[in-house]
Image (cartoon, rainbow, N blue to C red; front, side, top):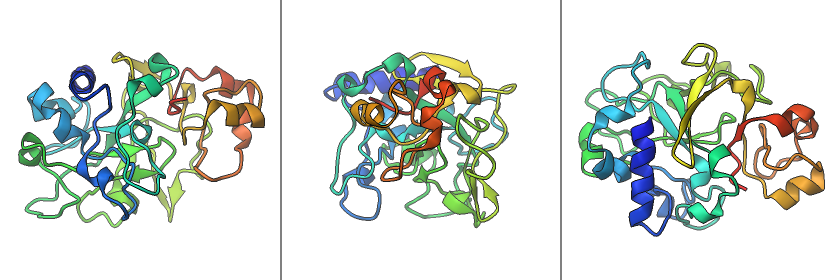
Amino acid sequence: MKQIGLGTLQYTQDYDEKMPYGDAGQSAGGGYQGVPLGWAGLIYPYVKSTGVYLCPDDPQTGDVVSYAINVFMGTPGSAAPGSGQSIAAFAGPSTTVMYCEIQNSYLAPGALDWYQWNAADIAQNFDIASPATDGAGSMWGFSSYGSGAPWGGVQLATGFMYGQTAATQNTGGYQHTVAARHTEGSNFLLCDGHVKWYRPSSVSPGWAIPADTIASWFPGAKGCSPGYYGGSAPNDYLNTPQCGNTSITWNIY
């Protein structure tokens, strides 16, 4: 995971300090505009091995990506094509999630589907399916063969983060979050490039909310966005003492 962080930061040095942002997010329509899909292919020239995309403790084998990028490294929800976020936009790089752990993202054997990916695609920088997530259950660019589950069956391998429960993480009986991969916690790569293990209760997922908006809702909850979805009403979890004490967040502001 550390190598992914180094590769991403090297990429930003060559591309005007902007986060990796693939072709899918540059196309209007289709629900992908503003979403930073394709990060694995874009940073491949810097990491030089598809092996770095597989966590040693991920039970999946083959062409697997064990990580998802924070969707707010792009501009999700935009009505038009966007671009990768500038590093200068981050209010707290050392407390903002860049990548988290997932499971069940792999290539269907013999498939030729533009949603899916493999090692050869990544090596040629042709990859739009390396995943993005808001940490609260929404996924982009996922495809796992034959599951029939939402987002192709890919799940957060973090445990339930702050503000999330089995009920909030359920769609049609399918759970979007499973037990944390590493002994009651999981690893997170932060925007300053360091990797750290956190218990899920220490992490605030959900849509990035401008600080002035949060302040107008609940004073003292700056940077916290557990389970918030764009356009939804303020989440009651924003107004709890724990929210102000979470260690890291998906919120870039």
